[in-house]
Length: 252
Image (cartoon, rainbow, N blue to C red):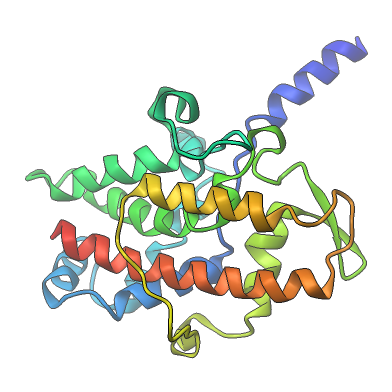
């Protein structure tokens, strides 16, 4: 009986989706992008979502807020892609089962946005805005064996927390700014190219392997780790915002 229960519990846990950046992180990505959209792209956005930056930023968190609604369960695997630790490149057949992962989702929803049909464009734009944030969070292209850090616990400020939540929530909070203050986020020498979703996932995976896991499981988050992590999360939020703008500008 115990074996049956444990098997059931494991099957349930494997279905638990990884959350992307916290609401604040997603809103920061969207706010950065909004400032760099072309006038034509803004017109397209406003036609789909309604007028203004507020609606654009609000759309960035929609995909997380509807996760408790069973009718949207089909969207849950689209927030991440888990890859083997030694993977150098994203492999669609290996990493994106049934084409349900963040890489393919961005491409699929983008095709909806460029189609002549109006159906599903609101959902598609909400998802693209959100998933551009997700794919730049390193643990959204993390390791398959620990579900992108969800099963990897660390100690931060005396409390046990999953490594995934630490990168989603605590690091973003450490930036100590509101999404309306993203102009304070700057890395003057950073250059960003658009590239493609698979490249963004490969970047995140490499950061996860090289940097994110540089703390032992159940180990304490050190000051040295925080110095590096703070810079990484700031850079990935900026990259996510700039690329979101570049991506939408290119689509339209």
